[in-house]
Length: 226
Ligand SMILES: Cc1cc2nc3c(=O)[nH]c(=O)nc-3n(C[C@H](O)[C@H](O)[C@H](O)COP(=O)(O)O)c2cc1C
Image (cartoon, rainbow, N blue to C red):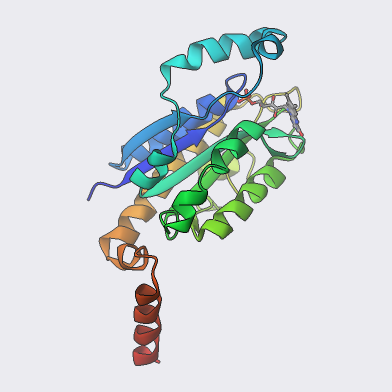
């Protein structure tokens, strides 16, 4: 069966963009229909101009379609990417997330598999904290967090972050960009494969009705099998 995966990310200077493309490739390799979407920039042109790398990537990224909350309604599963900013997600991604109140209220984010990835300058500069912080949002949505864990050699090869792929762009990185991209591909593939399994047996689609009846059905099933 074909599942729909939305890869939603922010990237100032391109590192997360590269990971996002790899996650999208991985999901597509499992047969998913993928939307790769970049959230809106919030910084002023003058701030961007102060960093030539930021300016270069911002101009190049206009070829990527802008993210909309409709992409989340469309998708069966999500992957979110952000640079690490003081050990937390970038404001640009948070701004996008803060527009999902309506979808959340309608139950359209619940029961959907979700995963996250990041990039930081330092190996211990807060990657894990950033991904875990996004996890707080996913708990509120009632989404199903799909971490890479230590389920594939690609995770170890990229530094062994079980929470989500993280690349290191500063001098403390080991320069193995290729390993992070491979781990990101694996993360996207795993997200799509697990979504296929979940949707395939109908359990997620039933529960995603998001109303009291769905919860009562689950409770009744549990009492029948107890
Ligand atoms: C305002 C700001 C805060 C940052 N905070 C951190 C941080 O806490 N830890 C870290 O290792 N790198 C930090 N960085 C560096 C970025 O996370 C790093 O360069 C990342 O690879 C950029 O990803 P991008 O190229 O997709 O924008 C920060 C960068 C900026 C501009």
